[in-house]
Image 1: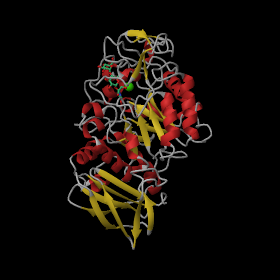
Image 2: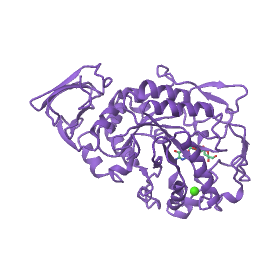
Image 3: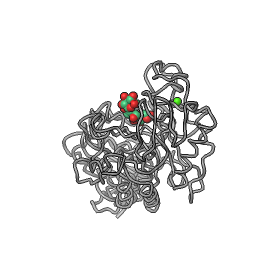
Image 4: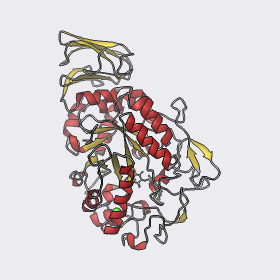
Amino acid sequence: TADGPTGADGAVIVHLFQWRWESVARECADVLGPNGYAAVQVSPPQEHVVIPRAENADFPWWQDYQAVSYKLDNTRRGTAADFAAMVDTCRDNGVEIYVDAIVNHTTGPGHGTGSAGSQWNGDTYSYPAIPYATRDFNDCRRAITDWDDPGEVWNCELLSLRDLRTSEPRVRARLTGYLNDLVDLGVAGFRVDAAKHIPADDLAAIYAGLRDVPGQGTKPYIFQEVREGGGPDAIKPWGYTHLGDVTDFRFHEKVGADVREGRLGGLLDTVGRDMALAPDQAVVFIDNHDTQREDMSISYQGMGARHDLAQAFMLAQPYGTPKVMSSYPYAERAQGPPSTGTEDGNPAGDITAATDCADPGWFCEHRNLHAMPTFTAAVGSAPAVARAADGGARLAFDRGDRGFAAFNATGTAWTLTSETGLPDGAYCDVATGPAECASGTVTVADGRITATVGPDGFLAVHVDATP
Ligand code: LAG
Ligand code: CA
């Protein structure tokens, strides 16, 4: 559950992966606020390494996951002023900013100059702009090899990334300070990157010093990246739920694959039975920026309209806080976002281009969901009640007496008539247009709804969107 003003059950997060700050601000005003989104997860905003073009195509997106300092200036996505303006604009449009917080590590080996001009040296564990020195890093200075050993997972190096000594009060205070600087700007939540690699007690100490979000009077919302591995895998997602929400990757694996294969029939049972966490503790997604690079078949690039259907189902069903993926096509794993090309005088190298959803360089998946987040908000925690099916690839359900949604994972239109708990009346299809009902209405009469769902399409109506 996302706590805070928008944060009850029903809050929808969208990850605008690698978007420039100015573009996020514009999207909050034009699209996200009006369509019911509660929050945006933005890419890591701190100073990062710059990997020259010669070594990797287009300055890899993953530069951002190697922290050189906690300065917000001159990342590839804009200046500190751009970042602050984005937070304000989004808040003014009812949308919170959640920052992807890199707190487990700094950089990998090597040395260089970061995006804001700070020196870093991963070989000598030296980050003077923070400052961190060698004593601030754990003693296990090698990559994690045994994932069944908690000590290794927590204290050795994830991907050779220099592992912070988060048991140390000085390091904790520095991390809390970084997060509080963001809170003071109005940042209302954090995705805690690599939380699995930090002992829960260390995270508890880091979070304990967080300030209230200005104007909100509550602590920032926290969700933690704890990926459940196969085998014994020592560290489990449920070891972190006492500190905040936690990512549940089972949703991606099970729901993503089922929707891809057109297996909708069992999905309500799956989300009610086979997930890792309690519904109000989980953050769920069809794909994230990592999984879409591991298994493109569960991504917009691999699934097209079927991926839209999968994300729409996620917004309609009752498990977890849904996080919508919005990304860009790529030809190789490391490929960065569309860029303006290297700008002279800016050490961040390639600067992320302003996002234009008409430009095929960006997918903008969230726009294909139209006002579906208003459905999620309107139904809250109302239970899912299956209402109609036709074979295994067509499914419709109520959310209590608050909403009705239908999904058609076939190549032909599905005209259905079904009982519904919705009161008799006319409703707007928020899945095909804005909640203001530009896209036509669906009627409930005598407790029955009649509707047509297009090929590989979906429909959603709810009590807060009527003509
Ligand atoms: C995450 N969650 O816990 C992020 O979602 C994931 O995207 C991050 O990895 C990871 N943890 C560390 O924050 C990404 C890339 C990696 C990349 C890393 C650091 O997926 O490929 O590693 O960010 O930039 C790269 C190289 C590695 C190398 C490492 C250090 O790919 O081969 O070992 O840099 O030099
Ligand atoms: Ca660690």
